[in-house]
Structures are given as C-alpha cells and as structure tokens.
Image (cartoon, rainbow, N blue to C red):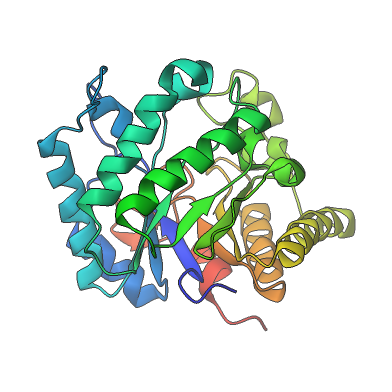
Length: 307
C-alpha cells in the first residue's frame, strides 16, 4: 500500500463545478477537521480547471481560480491531510482529444509550476475517468506528454494515472505507464453499476434499478475477483495502486449500501490497495451536511476496525 495514500475521501462538487454553477459543497476548515478526526489521511480535490483556463494559447488559468484552489490545499495541510489534486470534468477533451490535447498539457504545465515548491504531500492526478473519444492509444500518448510537462518543474512529485473507460478495472491492460518512479495507478470501482447507481438523478434509467440489493456470496466473490485482478496488474508492474473512487448512491437500501462499502474497503486493504471514498457530502456522501454529522453506517464501513 502506498504510504501517501491509505484512506481518503473526495471533496466532490466543490471545485469541479462549471463556471456558472454554484458549488454544492463549500470546503470549510470544520469539514477538514472532521475528516482528519474520523481517521482519513488524505483528501482528493476534483478540480475543473478547464472552465477557468483561456481557450487559446497559452491557455492561461485565471489567477482568482488558482487562489480558490490554494486556499483549499493550504486548509487541508493545516489538518495534516495529504492532498490529491486532479483535472476533473474536462468533457471537451474526452469528446475531441486532438483539439484539446495541447490545452490539457498546458494546463498541467501551469499547475505543476505553481505548486513546484509545495510539500510532496501534494499529489497530482492527471485526468479523472478518461473515456469516449479518448481511446487507450490516444490516452497513453497524451498522459506521457502531460507527465513530461509536470516533470519540467516537479521532477519528484507523485503523479497518479488511470486507464480509459472511466478508470475501469477491465481497461487496466491497455494502460501503458512511462518509466517514472513517481507514478501511482488508479481505478474507480462502482460494480455492479445498477446497484451502486440506482436512482442516480443524472442517469435516465436509474429509477428502474431502485430496490437492487447486494451482499450474497456471489456478490462478494465478484468484488474480490475484480480487485484481485487490479492488484495483480499493479504487482506485476511494481506500481502502487489506489482505488480513487468507490461508493453507492444514497437512494440504495441502507443495509446493502453499508455492506458493499465495507466489503470493498476490507478487500482493498487485504490486497494492499489504498482507497478514496466518493464522496464527502453530496450524492454518495458519508457526511450529512444538513445535520453536520457523519452518516454512521458509512463512516463505520470505511473506518471501523473489522470484527
């Protein structure tokens, strides 16, 4: 298991919203204190840099947005939390990678230079869930370019990369990692999808899945097979692997939701994989923002000592 990334949680819907969209989560010191006190050791900051960067060369990122991110990074550091900073929701790159490749690399060159003197407890994740027109060959080429841009100013910082198909386990064989001792790999895990995403408001058919339960022997065996496959891939390549996202939408049966979350977490730790729950306080949230308290079944599934 990576010593930098053991037990984490994503602060989704805070810095990854569109320019004209209000964040659903405001990152506050009180939330970061709760995260650290609960037992997490890192937070993941999904960030929509593409909404705040110029459309033409040199693709300058707005200073005011850099300032928003700086405050979040520094606040997390005050609570002794490692930070993973990524590029999130760059939809245009997914649709037209040839058009946006240079802009993507330029965005990373700016980010890396801005944080070049930061503690190594700030990590970079190149791109959340590459997919659509960004095929494995295109992504392998582009990630190598982005990594080279990062290394110009941040030669030793840990950089995280995942495969196409939205970081799916089955796409790992197509991920080709450059020679670089500072790389970690990541997957996202939401299987079975009709269970973890039942009732999700952005999926047209998701209400039809409501009532799907999870937890029998076959269900557990499927999770074990998937995560063992990922762990084997990482071990063969001698690269640390982190489950960068996993979680269950909050309309699922609470008991099944707790069982699945706990089992994925236990299997990850059994296999020596770090993990990061999605997410802190919105649709999959482990924390109830209205009550100002953890949802105890989810917190226990993530952090309680196995009996």
